[in-house]
Length: 193
Image (cartoon, rainbow, N blue to C red):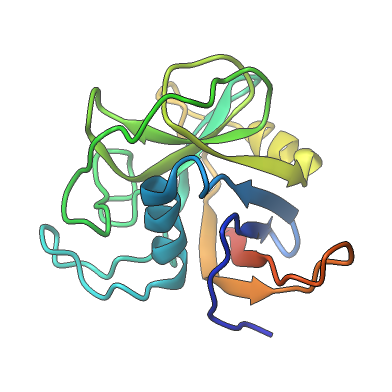
C-alpha cells in the first residue's frame, strides 16, 4: 500500500529483478542533508511534476541503473537520457553540494553522482568504497541485491548489457516498533529486461 507522507529521516526500498531481483532498503539522512534528501524523495514520488530545464517528468520511474562497477558502485537516476549524461533536480537543473558532513567511511552509502562541484541533479550511486560526494543515505538491507546488480556483465563504459529499470516508485509508510512513529519508506521496483 503506497501512502504519501513525510518523516525527518525516511527509509526507502528498491525492488529489482528479472522477475524478482530482490529489495534494497535505504535510510535517508534528512536531518543532515535535508535538501538532497528532499530531491531524492520527490524524484521517487514524482510529486514535483515536470522539469524546468528538460521538460521531462521529475521521477525515477522508467529510469535505469546505467553504470555498474564491480566492488565500487552502482549508479542510476538519469531519467532524461538514460546514459549518465542527463537528469535534473527538483530545483531546476543542478543544485549545490549541500555539505560533506557525512564521509564515505563504510560501504553501501547512498550518494549524489555529479560532474563536479555544485552539479547535483538526479543521479545517485550506491558506493562500496571511499569517494568525495554528498552522502545522504545508507543501505540498511538488500546488500545481496547490490551484489547481484554488480555481477551483471557490462560493456567497456561500465553500462550493463541488461537493463535494471525502475518500473514503479513511491512512498510506503510503516510503523516503527520502537517508538510508534511512522518512518517513511520509498518503494522502487527494478526490472531487468
